[in-house]
Image (cartoon, rainbow, N blue to C red; front, top):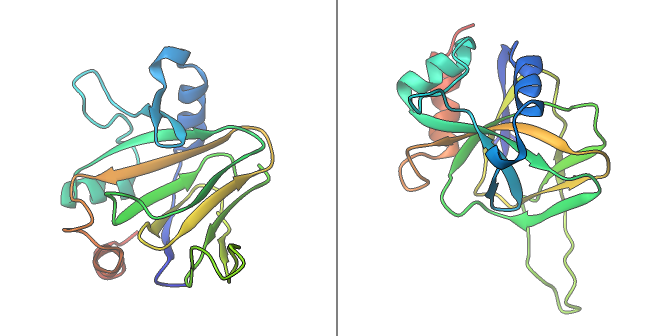
Length: 178
């Protein structure tokens, strides 16, 4: 599991603020981002909007990023995939009470002889107000069996050729202090 995702030891106080902000943005502010609707977290000058979080401040100084709130509709899914450009992401589920699941497949195989997809999977069970480092180069999917699911997600300026999950996980474990 420790090569698929990692909990960051930090309790964020941003959840309510982010949800309030997202719920109060007009529909035209949301943009299409892969299978999600996304609301970029930008201030008037394009800078990251929510600087009150100590972990995000620490992370941004080392690895600049853009961030947003992602929304996936209720009763929908985002199929098994690896991210095209991101080697790693930092996510925080803003609606952990939803009946939704983030699954990783360490041994994903596209199809077997019966044209079926099957194999082992591991669920990332999000804790409230908690950031998780995700290895977006391991197959993963989202299944949302409830109302819309909101997630804060970070995309680093450094792509998968430069920044890996293992490198950032090591940096956080060795250098981040609460």
